[in-house]
Amino acid sequence: MNRDLGNSGCGLAAAIVGLPLEYRHGVSPVAPPGSFAESLLARAARVGADPSDDEDTRASKGLLVLISLLILPISVVWGVLYLAFGSPVGFVPFLYFAILAGALVVFSRTGDFPMLLRVNQLDILLAPTLSMIPLGGFLGGSRAVELAMTTNSRGRALLGRP
Image 1 (cartoon, helix red, strand yellow):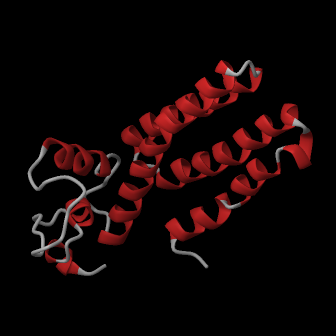
Image 2: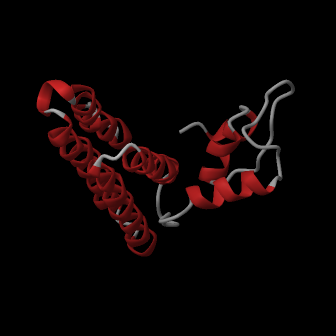
């Protein structure tokens, strides 16, 4: 990974690898430098990090944790919408939430990156599939299956495998 991330305008990536945050003129960071939001994102990205991790591993762990944290509120909205429209399938996203939150807690204690990645992959594969069955089977829920099928490629991208 490029050691010059601190000056590249990529503040969060710099925070993940532990470099000082500096922004180029004209670059708008996600959160203002030194803000509470930026420090919260940087802290979340370091969950499960091991001091002996190289920069690429640390960045991969941070990215997976941040993506997982971003998906948690989306799963709540997903479940609430389904339940609000009277579908019992709305409980599946809450199960997804519980499994992913539990995996994040275990990861924060153990730092077992492959475990977190596999739980993420299985969770996103099974949740849409289980939701699809009562929604009309394969044809009626094919978009959910399509999203679930991309799980493996996203996981491989995080592991750096072709």
